[in-house]
Image 1 (cartoon, rainbow, N blue to C red):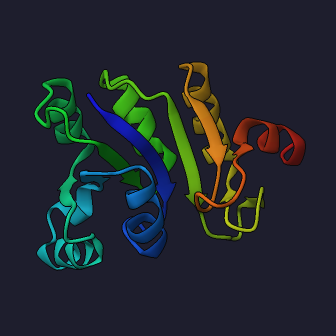
Image 2: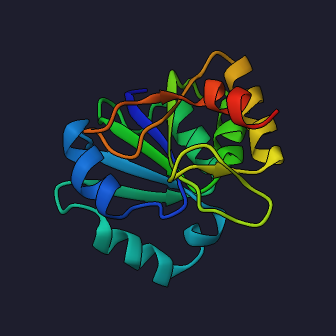
Length: 162
C-alpha cells in the first residue's frame, strides 16, 4: 500500500483536496470512502469533475476499499483517502488497512458539536471514535491546507472537550 494521505473532510473532493493536497502529496489516486456516493452516478460524476484530470478517482464502500488496499490492487500508485466522517477510517483500520496519520480538515458546526478549530467541530461521539483511532497508533492532526501548521487533534480534544 502506498497511502500518502488520509483526510476527514465533509466536502470530500473539492478545492483544497484537488488543488492543494493532491499536488503537494503527488497523489495519483483519490479514494473516496462513501457507501451512498458509491451507488449514486450523479454524486460520482460531481466528484470526478472536482478531481484533477491527472488523478484517478475511486468512490467505494469502505469494505470494498479495504479489500482493494489489502490486496494491493493499486500497486505503487500514490493514494489519498478521503471520507466525511472518522468512523469510515476506524472501519478501514478494523478491516486491516494500515494508516500512519489522518488529517482532519473540515467538519462543520452543528448543534451537538464543539469547536476545536474554525474548520473542525466534533461531537462527543466523534471524539470517542478519534480516541479509538489514536489507540491504534494513528497520528491525528487538524490541518486545513498544506500552508497552515498542523495541530495535534488529540490535544485539541483534551483541551476543549472536558
